[in-house]
Image 1: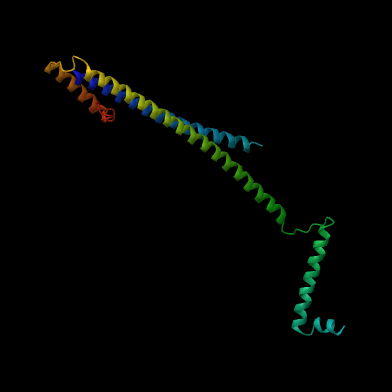
Image 2 (image 1 turned 180 degrees about the vertical axis):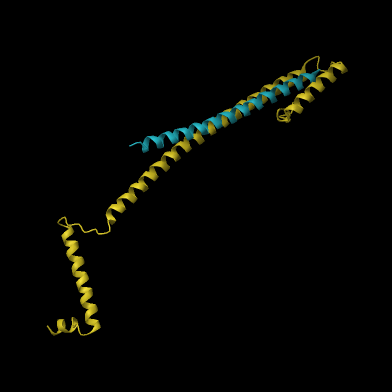
Amino acid sequence: MADLEAGYHQRGAEVVACDIARQTAVDVHDGEHADEAAWLKAQAGRNRP
Amino acid sequence: MRFLTRTFDFATPWGWAISAVFLVAFLGLLVFSLQGVGFRWDPFNLAERRVIRAEGQAARAIQDSSARRIETAGAQDTTRLVEAATAATAAVDQAAAHHTHQARSAPDANVPLDSARAGRISDGDRQLCALRPAVCAGRAAAP
């Protein structure tokens, strides 16, 4: 019975950890795109006469 | 006087050369002096080209500094995100370890599970892990 409980907790922890990693990857990816957009906007502002 | 006539003697090539050098030096000195009173002589437009080149370099430097600033801020954000993820994962592992320890210490820890039930649970777990192996990569082992 203890093994079942231990396995349950272990599997739950693995699912949560995987989701944390997934969300981090998404956030970093979104951050990169936001940085590119900010730079392009700054360039467009400078090039405008 | 003899020195001058001998030095600038146009009958000899040496005299021509020295005369040419003095003439160029005199003209250069004349242009330099006149620049002091505002006269500008720039037949190849070198000054304007220098200005254009300097302006281009300044614009490129501004672009580069803007990019570096955004890059640095982005790197700091990424570091913060990774640190937060690491802390959250550690908290998850700690919670799982705590509850696993409690389960193994409970009075009913050694109560056997029905073999058919255990088999169903194992099969279900195996199927889920086959669909997403990364989730079942075998994280911190339970005590």
